[in-house]
Amino acid sequence: MQKFDYLIVGSGLFGATFAYRAKKANKSCLVIDKRSHIGGNVYCENKYGINVHKYGAHIFHTSNQEVWNFVNSIVEFNRYTNSPVANYKGKLFNLPFNMNTFYQMWGVVTPGEAIEKINSQRKYMLDRIELSDTKEPANLEEQAISLIGIDIYEKLIKGYTEKQWGRKCTELPPFIIKRLPVRLVFDNNYFNDRYQGIPIGGYNKLIEGLLQGIEVRTNTDFFVDRKHWEQVADKIVFTGKIDEFYDYKFGKLEYRTVYFEEEVLDCSNYQGNAVVNYTDVEIPYTRVIEHKHFEMFGDEIDKCKKTVISKEYSVEWNENIEPYYPINDLKNNELYQKYKSLADNESDIIFGGRLAEYKYYDMAPIIEKVLKMDIE
Ligand code: FAD
Ligand code: UDP
Image (tube, rainbow, N blue to C red; front, top):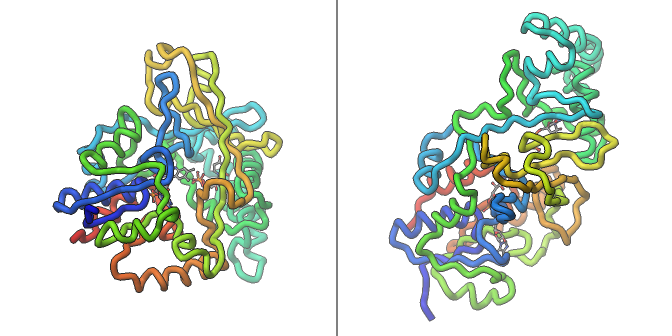
């Protein structure tokens, strides 16, 4: 039996970037993945020439020049800029909240007019918070109204957030909404990062580039023959679920899950944008993704006569569906710490990525982390 330096469990961005770096350091690697394909959650399925983001829309964004140069050395990135549109009962608004949104909402045309309108709408909530014991917003509703006013809260935040989180805004923590930028300029770019885009040819090109020349076996679950896999290499890089690695001995970690309903349509352009959020509570899905707009621009859109859309629903945690977003509440974090203390004592096993570290990572921070690791 050939003995490898590293067995890498999982061919997602963490595993693939680690394998790439290990190969550069002259280490031998074997990558296994239980899915039928490589790439983990960034994997795309090509349908009618369109790269369909099978596990949810992925937009690469970063301000880290080293990470940006690294990914572009594997595959060139296109000029896609994420500019989602919100649909509230058939009326459209630009996101994130910026001068375009304020014009559409109130007809205000200057930043001064927008500030005046926002301030008049925030006032009653700020007064209410001032009278409270803590003098801090107590929940997401209070935070949102005190940031941006009642109209935007009711039309663009309340329904979307309650569908996404499955709970009332008054029961959600304030910090969730602070992530969304509020801008007094006409700028629909969802991210503040310096660089963003989608790999030209799709994310599979990025993963294939990272794994070039490395032995990979798909349809191979580490746990089906654990004893065997533990012997094939000196060290293991494990990117699967940490609780599963320890046989759930302390209990199961929970995830927030999304479900995608995919449709192929006989038209070349369904909604004119990659992402449209449905912000009223009556429409059951949170957003509709039209995949071709991530990679097709100008005339290319009409040349491809079909289009593929995915309606995204938030669903309650259920062990039989894909684990997506870790629920980093107190209970789950405490449970994770128990597993982590076992993992910290393993000398030949590296636990990395969103499932093994039970942490939501965007793609760029995953790469940044692997680029910083000492691989020996
Ligand atoms: P994964 O991609 O999950 O890879 C883990 C791999 O391990 C999988 O292939 C799995 O099959 C394999 N595996 C697990 N257990 C075993 C086992 N027992 N045996 C063998 N193989 C196993 N980031 C952004 O930067 N921008 C975005 O727009 C964005 N959108 C997102 C949307 C959604 C819905 C989600 C869930 C995430 C999004 N992300 C986004 C985050 C991004 O997906 C992650 O940063 C990245 O995929 C993490 O890579 P990973 O290698 O840690 O995990
Ligand atoms: N949000 C909203 N309306 C929107 C988009 C986002 O109210 O149209 C809220 C929602 O509560 C969400 C938060 O803003 O959880 C952060 O948005 P982001 O897009 O960063 O959330 P993600 O989908 O990545 O969790």
